[in-house]
Amino acid sequence: MTIALETKGLEKSFGGLKVTRDLSLKVEQGARHALIGPNGAGKTTVINLLTGVLKPNAGRILLEGNDITDLAVHKRVLRGLSRTFQINQLYADLTPLETIGLAVSERLGRGGDWWRRMGTRGDVNQEIAETLGSFHLLDVMNERTATLPYGKQRLLEIAVAIATRPRVLLLDEPAAGVPESERHDILAAVAALPRDVTVLLIEHDMDLVFSFADRISVLVNGAMLVEGPPDEVARDPQVKAVYLGEAADA
Ligand SMILES: Nc1ncnc2c1ncn2[C@@H]1O[C@H](COP(=O)(O)OP(=O)(O)OP(=O)(O)O)[C@@H](O)[C@H]1O
Image (cartoon, rainbow, N blue to C red; front, side, top):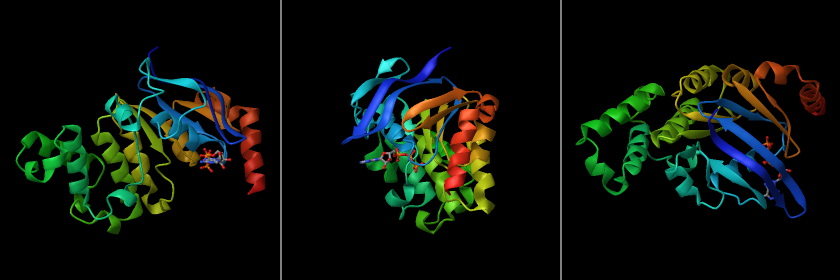
């Protein structure tokens, strides 16, 4: 078993508030691994620790066996660890074609002159077209991202992350806020992600989690409550209690 991403005894506090407690997580290479937990369990904090946005108070993070705990965000991306991020804040005025063009060109080290290069490099153009096609964005590729249906914007976020050619992809709530009519496209896109990319999914939508994941880790109060295959996790009385408790609070 090869481990693509691992945390060892990860700890994070904000002032006196401990939000990540002795977290040891192993994501196998090629896995479809989901990290779930009730509101405030600390899932976003874990993602921020993994990507390097936050520094842990203790513990280590290993990517393909190499310690990346002290690496800056962009260096982790160069090592093959990417996440989806809120595209509507960053690329609202660009089109999907321009956005994916920029992402591919950046990866190839040609970010600065991508406008000029686009259209002149057959391999780059083909990759851009393939990426747009596999995320169902060809029909809207020349529209401003800000004007796209929300589901298409979320697809574009995943497409941008894939354009960086990650070996490990952190998918942060890809279905959040997507209307029912567009959810199917997100589920289909996530299901069709390349198998050689290891995926850690953070998601509230249990349909998506259970249709996607081959392994599930349940986080409660910053600590790992249960980890295992989906059927085991679904049957676990502690997990049921946590989610029933959340439903009762709602
Ligand atoms: N920068 C911060 N400063 C202080 N407290 C924080 C900070 N970030 C998160 N927290 C607290 O840490 C706890 C975990 O938050 P986090 O956002 O990681 O949980 P989550 O599982 O992602 O929640 P949700 O599912 O609601 O998004 C919460 O109590 C939150 O208020």
